[in-house]
Length: 487
Image (cartoon, rainbow, N blue to C red):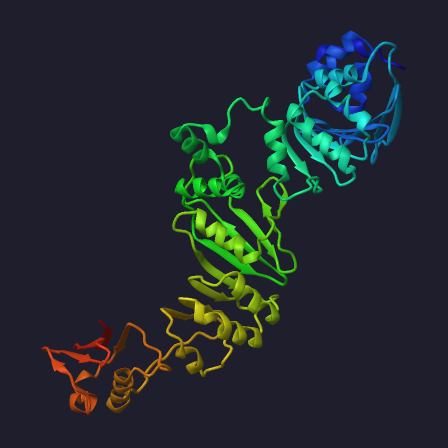
């Protein structure tokens, strides 16, 4: 038995509306002015995207909170042709409706109706597909504003250029999937020609304090993009004294990933999250993950090492803090990595790296590192090959076979040989600044044997050795230990 829908009690009517999906709500809203206001009162918040094709418009809509609709398995699609809409939904309860346009109504009336009933005054995403120039002339009439405009690679160059020029009138952000400029600085010229009447303030014409404030409000990604525009913007970005955290780089099979973090949260929405940059060995462009999708950047004449040098130059006190080598890294790429990142503080060779990869990584990259951490045992128990480099620190973090020496007998003769090697300054001898030996049987140490053949100065339980190059070694003997400290 049919039930008069509009005669339902208010609560039942609201429940019925919540059980409808977006397509059904649109159809209901078209029945009368009362149904239109009923749908609006349901207060369903949606996100929407529109794509302009050659002979139709495709509009997708879905609720911002999927649980707001019980019967909402996926997006509802609307296809607008000359005088009618096709509404489709696939999955559970698949349907396809054809809705004719009322005489006298226009496409902009339909879009306005759609935005009115869903309290959505702006289209979230508008995509220009394989449209014609004549289609672009009417775009602003039915979509006066959108948050983001995308020019797909399906656009012809002519359509893309025209859409780009008109985009400043309707869009907050623009994303282009093809190169529409004839020369390297074409985008700068294009912007300068088309933004004269659209931007009331020229950024580079701002007073110094206002310009500094503007730069401080930029997130890391925006500041990098700004610095690439010209030599002046690069210097402005540099003199803004923006500090970032230590940069971490990880090498994978065919690319390097850099993670850049701000030193502190500065009340900028994007800054608390890291910026990830990807350098593909086979392509001079870089890709950035800025939390809003992947962006590809290319600058004429820039190789991989130029990108790294540029980043380090604009951020105050920045450096590559750690370079990590993963097990999927190819040995053949190590020389490329060395050219791209010629200097860093710490080299970290991951646990799953093969013995061959670990050895070659150490031989090629350890000489340009200050510290090295190795998570496996490439040389077995013979680590003498690793001690020939003058590193500040060498760490073995192989938790499966930890290095621990207990009850080791070290004779005075061996300590004497150690001191003589230090005095000769043999370049193949590893020279840490500080060594501490715990020797519970101090009384058994023969100091004459320890310092045999070595000139030293006795300073009351401390003994100072002076090398030919002027460096000094201080040896302290206490009741439980012997300390060696390079002064």
